[in-house]
Length: 346
Image (cartoon, rainbow, N blue to C red; front, side, top):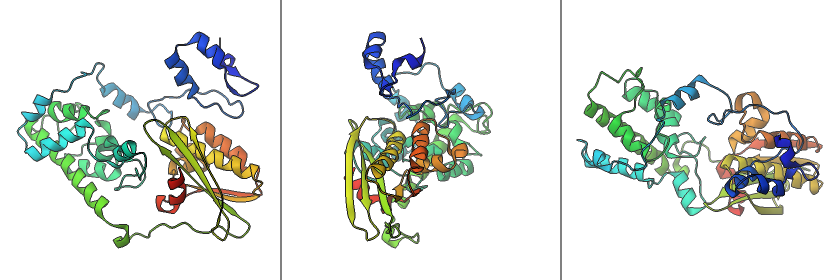
């Protein structure tokens, strides 16, 4: 049996009856979250641990450094026994407990808000991104800790932060290993985390009104064009996408919103772009501009070789097919400030 036999070709959807006969409920739920392309596409191998689905030595190395078995319980006593300042212990405890108020954490709990990293403004501010993946954080690690490449040692879960400080899971090739005692290394790492958090808070507290950077605003489309702003909002239980259509005068002529399956945030953003194009065609808009603040989704449309993300590739291909149905169509990125109306609707 092949995967194709599980698809109802008449509706281009999964055959739920057949899936229920072959798989358990959890497996069926997972399969139904896989979005099928609008038209058959050639199969290809995807490496799911890499965002672009490619095999890279970097991702293989990181995977090889991950322990095969991890403890379910955190040894908090190891943290409290460390000879570091209580302020640092409390910061590490907040990180490991998952209660540090990063933007992504707040959005997940509140169901709305801006989740972008205040340091780079390109990715969602998760714990892993803020402390290890962000370009500024990586520079701090590289300069403060004997050229440590933080993206190679980043913990995979909140609780791994404890082991990161107490057990120092450094690759054997890391220059720091052997050059510094365990306690000094723990102090250095804890201070680096505190430095990154302090820099982050200073960047977050800067008011846009007093910033030297230009503030983004929504701009009217040219005459005869309709601009559609799209956005997605996720909560712990559901996801919503929204589309706002405005004419060259800036007047709202249409607004749509609907709930969609709770999937990866990037997938939901890509889904919103496809829906906007479908709505524009159904409304017979000839000339349109579609704006989204999901930069990776836009990059995957125009630079698939560089930005190719396997999670949204089906949606990108679908968007490209839909674009050819217009007299003129431009899909472009807009900063979060210029997409506030669509964000509020979602």
